[in-house]
Image (cartoon, rainbow, N blue to C red; front, side):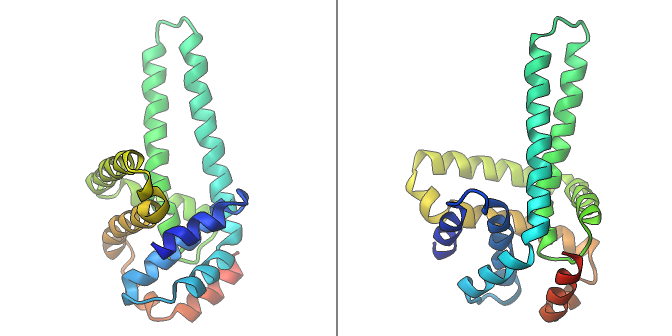
Length: 199
């Protein structure tokens, strides 16, 4: 609950939404590692360490999402005989973007890599064991519906629980795809140093 409220408050300036998302996943990652975490200090650390990459990721995916949405709107107005094929192609691209989006912030707080590598790896992680990604989407959809029905959940639990679910699914994949992950978890200082160099 504290993490959820902290996240909402840090999103109020609007321009801080993307680093706030990174910080949210950073705290969740720490929970998965140690079960106990100083929420505020960890949140602040991850907020500053991932400032640059989180903005690049957020802006990129926002632009792609708007582009695909506008394409569908424009396509709807065009009298084309092959319109269904284009719609399917756009929806397929959109699905891949969603898969990548579900993995990119967990990867960001778990690895110190370049922006290009981060985007490529996020798509690979999203596609890997795709049934887990689909399961995550279904559970998130149900959780979103429940939270909209009972609005108090949004303020107290929605974002932190959603981040935990997304990271939990991503972490199941990391164990197969990133065998070096366990050793990285024991050297957070090295992660921070590398993150500053990459960022």
